[in-house]
Length: 171
Image 1 (cartoon, one colour):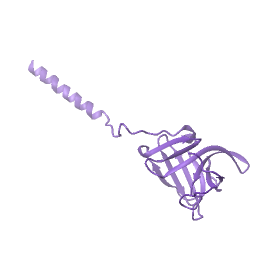
Image 2 (tube, rainbow, N blue to C red):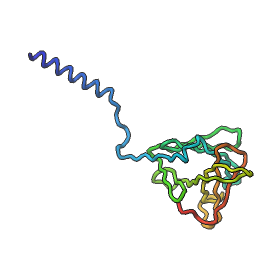
Image 3 (cartoon, helix red, strand yellow):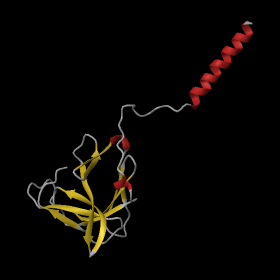
Image 4 (spheres, rainbow, N blue to C red):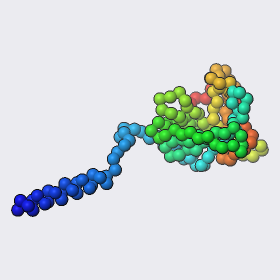
């Protein structure tokens, strides 16, 4: 009787050890909130833009909104290689207010403001994502309007498209 009980105990401990070895461990904090990008931003795989920096140089930008994060890519000429960066899900946030989406790194002032809209460019109507530029190509933050809004499109162009706002948007 004791041998049978000992045998059952060994089987129980072995099966518990096997169960523990195949059960995945939880690495993320249970309280971490993952923000989900809205379908409007994720609908197209890539958003492309050609923007002028504060030195007067034109650069190509690309955004890719995954379900819980965002990927950035930039290059200095059209035929060059993309240089990638990424905000991982546990550091990423996105929120919508008055039609504008604000996204970026949590607990940081490094944020982006974008607004999807239909715009006429080159006499054609395009679905665009306008990125608010608080510096107006001057670096830092511009206090007085007009403000530049760079247009991202669903295809890459050699032209930098933008429009101006005469007021600070209510993000």
